[in-house]
Length: 406
Image 1 (spheres, rainbow, N blue to C red):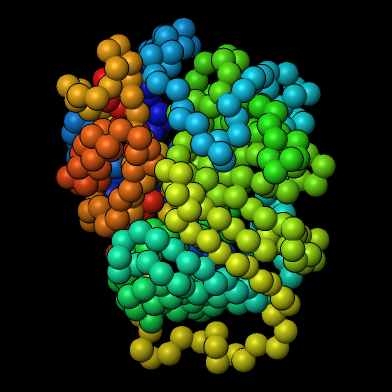
Image 2: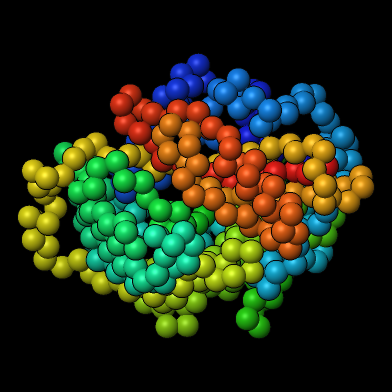
């Protein structure tokens, strides 16, 4: 049995204002004001959920030392192979000041290259055309555009299948043309992969380092998990780790994986230099071995922008839903068939959850065992994940549930 950091957060760090998620959402509101999700760290939940609402979802065991965690980790099946799962070989722990400084500096280079929303960044117009697969009504060709003049002056629009939205930030409020429409999972993935792949406070985390090769180039992969995980150098990625693989020469992010089974790959071969950043020309997102999103990206200086485009119309509604950062947690599934004797077999479910805790979309990131994948999907879909509001403003969530069959 493996415990993710969310379980620990609920045990130790959940604030009193659970329904409104005060502790995290104040950060989230500021980030949304800047067109960003809240301070993103998939290892730390920024909006706590009532433990009693989760019921049998979580099993929190306190007082486990690193030896116990290591024993539990060894009982898990290995992370499945994938062409984009680059950290499959030797790993070393960043356990000295020099090692940590070097890998954190590399992560910061990648972060700064992607952070088009940094204070003082050049105004831009970014356009994305893409093709997505998934829910039938939310599949096919799509478009996304962002006009960004400053953190308090921007416009974002998107279209995919039956979904369309325009959001304008005006006088501290986000106004939407399509009130209460949730952002489809594929668009959440697209926005997160373009604007905030390297996010959150990483300096306090356990970091393991794996050399790898991507498209014939040597890359350095940073494997990041909670500080309570065992600082050991067993080869390969752990189920709890995020993975960032970066070209050490250019500082450009090559692949990003928030959880095993989902990968964003960046192609800079025809990338656009933009005021010190290199924007990838092509972004591909792969889930369970299948490409589910292929995007072409272009960016240019914003130039002269009609002020009318940045003012909400009478038909728009605000405040729009706050889109919070992805979160991860574990669900124990005892007594299921399909897992090997004495082995924990995780299946990670990726889902979109509305403000009332209902699952809107869900997909399995591991599909080699169809029986386990279907059982994991059913378990996640049947649960309610609690209300998530800040005052009267709904919060949209993207979750990664590590369903552990044992």
